[in-house]
Amino acid sequence: MLRIREFITLLMINNMILRSEMISTYKTTDFSKVVHHQSDHRDGESLHIGIDDTDNRSGRCTTHLAFKVTEQILRKTNACFIDYPFLIRLNPNVPWKTRGNAAVCVRLKSDIKDQQRIIDIVKYYVESEAVVGSGSNPGVVFFREPQLPETITEFSRNAMCNILSRRDAIRLAEKYNIEYFLLGNGRGIIGSLAAIGCLLDGDHTFEAIAYRRPENFGTSRILDSDRIIECSKSTYPYTFNNFDFTNRRVLIAPHGPDPVFCGIRGENARIVVSSLQSLNIEEKLEGCMVFRSNQGTNMHLRNEIKLPEAKSFTSGHIRCMVSTRPQIVQGGHTLFSIENREGFRIPAAVYEPTGLAKTASLLAEGDILELGCGIRRASSKHPKILNVEYFTVLELAKVFELHNPLCRTCSKSMKSEGKGKGFQCKKCKLKESSSLQKASIQIPREISTGLYIPTPKAHRHLTKPMHRFGLEKGLTDYSKDSAIHSNWFFLN
Ligand code: ATP
Image 1: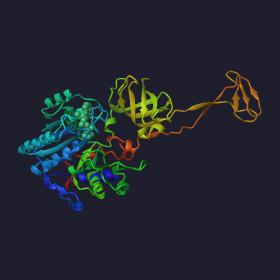
Image 2: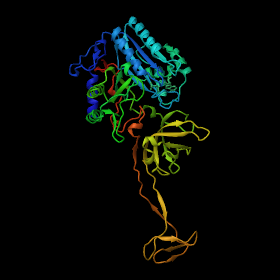
Image 3: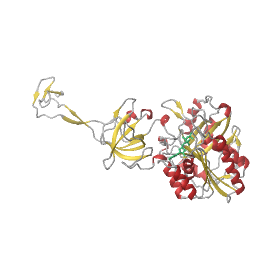
Image 4: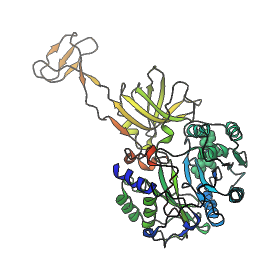
């Protein structure tokens, strides 16, 4: 814990701003000779750019668009990046998301002439790369002040766990003089505004994403799983979700036709870049960029769910009591009911792919839990359901079973003679009157108190991996005025 904090602080005090000279060649970069540049534009004009909803299921990716835009900014302007590009995951239960509900943000300082050039670059790429008409509804925002208004950061906090409206986003943008640029139905303005409003001044992680060349899109990704395993072990606990050791599955690469080759997630920029390098990827890549991110932080579950008013598609956590015995149903999912302090009941579901369903079936009425969950909409077949993302068993209830009494003479279990007819010993045939009661015996519980989270292959982007508990960064771990410099952008 202390070591990672010291390490990060060391990186922070370098007080660097990232500049165009930092474009380096992926395979030939010498990490021991990183040059730190001071900004020429400390007093330049601020520009926060938020981008969302530029992709659809058949390809493209908003992070790749941010990569292309960043390349152009580095090449064509003297702007300084005052932070890494941000990769912000928003409420994962939003029904109209394409995949992982990602939005991106780029924060810069530049002179006014460059600002206009940058805005034009962003608009050009969004217009030419976004697949409007087949599922993407891009929204881009440009905010030119150094400080984000509290209302925008509040909007961003809400976007992690609630469903927000496009109308409110537009109203806010107009109120604070935030320029926006929309295509399609423009719903992307919600995510783009939320991205600039997310300051990541508390817990955060990093991801180094490697991008493919267009000629390779759609072909299978060749990765050496031994190297991934080796990298995963040697960087533990400072990288996460590289390899699922239980299911023997590579987690760093997507499977679709999108431009992402793979991504390494971890606690600081240096470790994600060096891990990526250690994989010796053979495919000729387009390049790589490091994002600062809320991935792996459980940011979407910070909000407390209030019953009964909690709305469908929202996310959060709730302290509750198990109020019906869990049942495993078809498909291997576990269902039970919980009730809050006021006695309001709602069903909860732990789905089989999480790997937690069997464990959840060991819960019992009266157990006190904290659930991290999303709220599934009611349908004609079921009411609203809490879809469980993690559970913490806070207190275990005592569980008793009724057993037939033991025989007074031979200590064998007796047999009931029927309701109200007493008991008879199976061995010595001793009969006992109907006044003898069944014995209530406390049975040992097969589950203990503690935190239960899904198996890594079922993690959402925001799911906090088990080993990140205790590694969370606090307010003092990141200063906005001293952005970290590292080998954050490479072109091949
Ligand atoms: P990918 O992860 O591949 O980048 P995606 O899952 O991010 O794709 P998008 O194409 O960005 O999917 O679509 C998500 C849409 O949902 C965007 O228009 C975004 O503005 C909107 N959105 C994000 N968060 C919320 C929210 N909390 N409430 C309402 N709409 C939201």
